[in-house]
Structures are given as structure tokens and as C-alpha cells.
Amino acid sequence: MKSDGTASPLRAGAREGEQGGLAMSRHSAWNKHKAVRTASGEPRLALAPVSPWTHTLVLSGELNHRSAHVLEAEIDRVCEEGVTAIIVDLRGLTDIDSTGVAVIAFRSGLCRRRGYEFTLIPGSDAIHSAFEEAGMVDLLPFQEDELTASEP
Image (cartoon, rainbow, N blue to C red):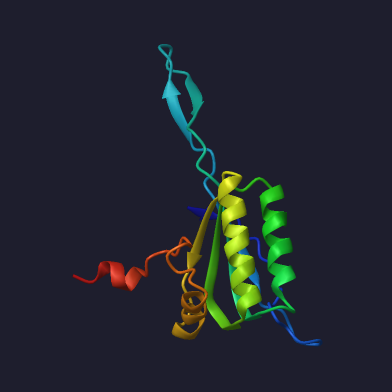
């Protein structure tokens, strides 16, 4: 898929005066035009079906009771833009508390009920253990680790 190159510098859990780091990149498949020739040899364009727009939210820093509202607002914003799939990348998180886990769980369910795809890219073992402690690992749509998936 092509990326349209959008990004917003916000940091989950950033302290006042720190620079941001919650970066988003939207990936979308553009309409692909096929050149079709008519009987007279004149080209005619036909539109192929459009693939869904996927927006990736790359989280960094801490996702906790102080910063969870930033993630909620960003998910709402991208849904309003018309995306059909959201990926939340947890690999850059350094810490997550129960509020962060709850926000992700709630927004995941809400997005899926509204017809959006919602996927999580797992973070570090410490981040993943927070989801395990909350009993959410089997309930959330974690993407399988690419390295694990490719191993025999």
C-alpha cells in the first residue's frame, strides 16, 4: 500500500515541554486506473475497486490516566476522516497502566461494532503483561508477530 505521508507529532504521556511522539501514518490504496482500449483503439479508463484506508497510530512514551484521552481523541478523529481500518502500534510504549489498557479495549470494541477493522501490534513484554494481567490478551485483536509467524 502507498502511504500518503501524513504524520502528527504527539506523545502519549509527554511531560510539559517535551516534544511529541504519538505519530500517525495513514496508508491508503489509491484508485488504480486500467487502460482499456476500445474497438477504435482509443484508450478508456476503468476504475478498480478501492481498498480500505488504514490508519496506523504509533504510540510512544506512556499510555496512562494522564494521556489516554489523547489516544481516544485521535481514534475518534481518524474515524471521522473515513478510514476503515485502524492499527495501534504499541512497540514504542514504555509503560501502560490499567486506564490505558481499558481505553484500548473499549475503543477496539467500539470500532469493531461500528464496522472498522481494529488491530494491535504488540509491544514489549512489560506492555503485553499489562494486557495479560487485565485478562485482555485473548479478547483483543493482536497482530501476530512477523518474526514468530515466519519461524518454522
